[in-house]
Amino acid sequence: MSTILNGVIEIYDEYAESWFFVMDTFQIFNQDYDIFALLFDIRNYIEIKPIAPNRGLPNDISQQTKQKFKSKYDSDFTFITYRELTTARDTEIKSKVISIETDDQGGIVEEGFSTREKIDFDSHELFGKVGTQEIWFRDGRYFVNREKTSKEIINSNWEFKLLMRIMNLLNEKHEMERIRWVVSLQLDRSR
Image (tube, rainbow, N blue to C red):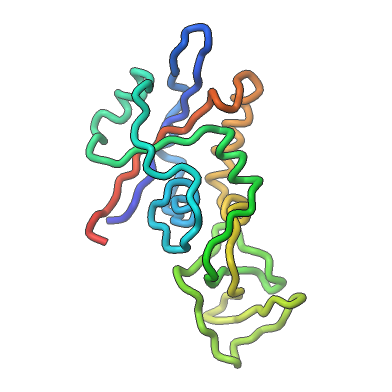
């Protein structure tokens, strides 16, 4: 068993002075530990500074959100606002040096593989260079050894892009701070 990220999107209605459930995101996210690390400090093998770690469940969640999470109260919870998600998308927070799957030109592959540690490639695995960046070839894939940025993590994950498109639409009517993603982090604590 591993980590599963479930959640709901809520908006704050200033007239009612309360949060309202908009939709659940329980089927959107698969296991992308780089996103989990960047956003919530979960499975942070790449040692990147998280945006919203360990906040717990907000005390003002909507009734529908309480119902969605009813069976998940043995989980860890946190939340993040749309503004914070946008900041993560536009900021260059960096990880430790790791090996990142790329194309043959050094561009990160969407949904590509990243290691937890830097791979020490053998000299015969050097494919070439783009600028000063060395590109390595192993097991039918290209890699670079370098830091990964928050922008790259977000831009290489189609699920996060989908979440942001939904929030972008909500932002046409609601302010950024009044849109939040509340998540349940079901962890395999044996690791």
